[in-house]
Image (cartoon, rainbow, N blue to C red):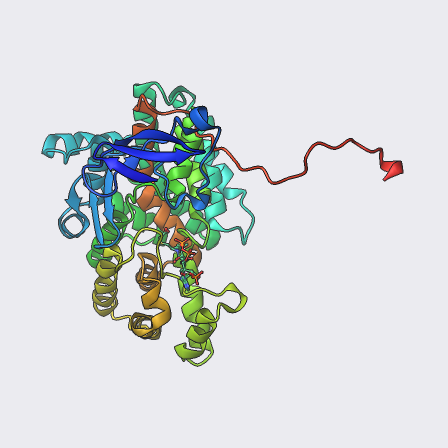
Length: 428
Ligand code: CMC
């Protein structure tokens, strides 16, 4: 394909030249609108893993992967992580602008009114067998919210969708905390809607009334860092499910399923397991790195690499600094932080990682902070889910209100058998 002039691109198929519109981006990559290709040529495009395909136009989050830039609604992640709060960022992502004081108060109050969990949801959470992964239970509980809020299921009705969004933001902290308590064999604690959102989440999780302000600040900041990341795997899943006009609960619960994978949100858990393995085998990272570079048994340096970032993930830079600060403040020095820094140091000087532009991503250092706060490893990805919730909600709303949205339905390049006749089992 060659670009013929600004505003268009030409593509030659079987001697015929076709022109496609160029869709300008405000920043970042422009697109070529190839939606008419099939009709005019009979060809589909093949782009496994969507490495080159924009699934939508979006005005929520901007990433420049080469420069290591991340902005929510134009605001640099560094400024939001430093100065904002999770609920303010949630408002920003969902409504597009930072709230004034009154709007933030009203938004917070609307959430507070729904923080209690439905009895049925509590019962459902209690039925999870011991050893169940918290992500499986979280996904089920979010999906089940649809059964308890029947008047909020139509995603095309702005009021119902808005109400469902508030319900999700309000109840997911209590669900995540209940999942943690249940997994630990501890009694589940009810929310206290008069208490701050993040403080109460930590109280419900750890069962202690006096929550350390440094832990609250770090938790709030980590939630902000995870709040959106444009068209990643789980967000694309949320949009895809929602494009069929499924409820936002069904869509977000599918997003939780996608996030549980170790190549996505599950990487934060996998990083800690990897660090623990290295620690238990003596702490020498070089053997492990040799395995990674030889691609032995498909082993990867978890928490490294990213589809979009070909530079240091700006979130990882913030988390790395926070890991030092939080561990210092809590007086919880951890040999695993030294192992992680050792791995990073090797990787940043090694040709394998340099040539592939593999840098630490957000998941590389987060687990060390969660561990220092007292979260068990299996709770790391549920924490990511709680953080990503505003992004999923904002992206769902953008998708469902975009007149250009169609049901997500990719094509394929068929490689199977051509027509053949059925043979009865006795004759095979
Ligand atoms: N360790 C070792 N090699 C790697 C890694 C890694 N972590 N990541 C990529 N590579 C290699 C890969 O083997 C390939 O090598 P080659 O060119 O020789 O075939 C090359 O780098 C390109 O990798 P890719 O798999 O084609 O890249 P991708 O864009 O499809 O995958 C990724 C991105 C994040 C899935 C991948 O980097 C990875 O598996 N990382 C480890 C898991 C992880 O940390 N995931 C969290 C991502 S960030 C937060 C989130 O989304 O939740």
